[in-house]
Image (cartoon, rainbow, N blue to C red):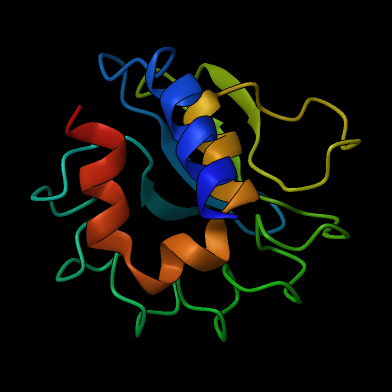
Amino acid sequence: MRFILSLFLVVALATIVNGQSLLIFGGKDHDVFLGCLNCDKYQDKSIWNAYGAFGSKCNDKCIWNKYGNYGGKYSDYSPFNQYASHPPVLVDKDGNFYGYFTTNKFFPKRTTSKLALLIVDFWEAIAEDVSGYYEKIFKR
């Protein structure tokens, strides 16, 4: 498993673009802000900031909270529930749509963001060590 994850990380790192901030919105109408997918871990809105609202596993609006509405594998609003009817979306600050953030490979208009796909494929491991994976992914 670690070898596969390491190999995937190497491939994904070559294609991740940090220039455009991708924002995550969830809920039935995608009106709930869930944080920034590729922002620096020190930014308040980053999902990688363990001390921020969107990176804290205790916050209901955090994708790493496996018991919250937007995390775990059972919530209809979670990117990690392969059967979710209402997975989050990824947009930029101008509202341009980058696809649905979902583990379901057959969901229409699923994102092609390499970072988002890396996260949905390895979310359980990442959720256990968010800071460690941030370092592996962003600190090339």
